[in-house]
Amino acid sequence: MKKHKVVFLLFLLFFWNVQLLAANEGKGIANIFPQKLELMTKDSWSSAPLSTNSAFDKLSRYDAVWCAQLIARHNPKAWAFIRRNEPDILMLHYISGCSVQIDGGFVCLDYNYINKHHPEWFLLADNKNADRGDYKYNNKRIRWNSEDKKHSYYNRFYLDVANKEFQTWAAQEILNLVKGSGQVGTGAYDGVAMDNVYVGRRLHKRFQFKYPNWKYADDYAGWSKGYSDYLKTVKQVLNKHGFILVANHNPAGEDRAGEDQTWGTFYDSVDGLLSEQSLKSGWNKDSYFTGDKWLAAIERHEEVLKKGLINWWACHPEGEHQRDEDIFMYTYCSWLLIREPGKSLYSMHATKFPSRNGSWCDEYDLPIGLPVSKRYLQNNCWLREYNNGIIIVNPTKGKQKIIMDPQRLWLDWSSKKSVGEIDMPPRSGRILLPTPYKPE
Image (cartoon, rainbow, N blue to C red; front, side, top):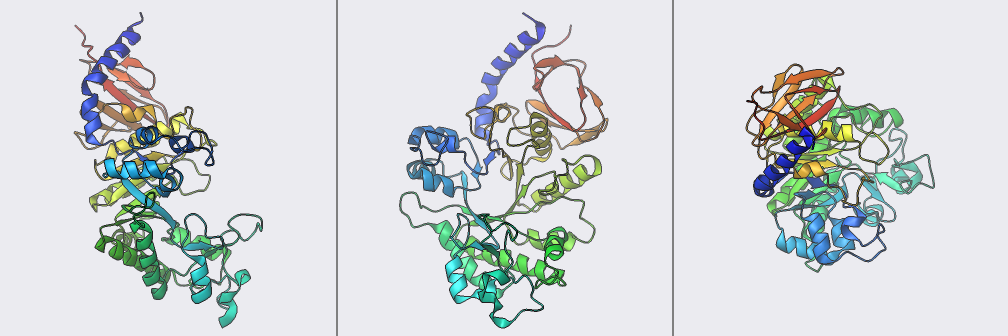
């Protein structure tokens, strides 16, 4: 048998000896949208639900679920069982913070109420040249997708979240959503997961470019403060009743000049942040950050943690749907560099994984234990030590070499080989695990 296979088998023995520690520590792995096969017998929402025990086995591995109403809607028995037996799993009700849809949508507030009683809460595409009655007409409002009339979001409209009356109403509506009715499948959530949080100059400019005459086109401060006030109002109402607010907003980091005040206000308005496309600039086609941009994002995420907030990474593969091994290891290991148990969450969201294992990756089960150091720099790479492993990230565009302790070899999880030194490809992450091997 080859030497590296012997080392790997020895590692498996080590794995079984320490897996209990890993099971008790909380891995920080979270689920954005539960996959159909985690809830249903077939890859279809119209199929029969999984048995309660099967769904529980799949979903109880996670420490948090962003869109937990999928569980309540499609497998209510499993939902009730999980809530009763794993109450510490953070279950959030996912909503859009600033839009409503004519057909109600899956994540929107009540369009019919707003349209009938408060049409002035809609944002107009041309506010400068509007008449008072224009709020009543769909063709005058800012649409989510104004180009494609056949798109499901064509009849989805943006709201003036800076409006104080809207804030008061929305906070109560959101509270009612997370409280549930107490019936099977509609029990209370732990809080709200708010999407479409458009705070910051980058997002403000996106609106301004498309709608140069919208209400806040020349009032960035008013829009920014108004949105933060809205979040703060929702947070206060939720917190009063024991619920939390986690908002989707990406702390890219390179925007620090001139944006610190905005971020400071934002931190005070939420209980946590989910950063979609973490270590990446939103939904544009830029690649994942390297160099100074990577470090700026890491430092911003550390700032979130220092504020005592939940820091949730939602990463996506660069390829279409399938899990991208290189990107997964790069983002997951970057997250492990700054992970704080109890506050840090990680998700790799892909609609198709290479197994029927839902959104779960084998690396989540590695028994690395808890962090025992801060991240530190070695040969242009960042390292962090855990009880039972070492994390290495090369955020540069060039290959780097890391020389380990000469008195022992480590198992490189990616190659399954025992190593004393490791070549780190550009933009890469690696997990090293201890082996019993020691040279004579």
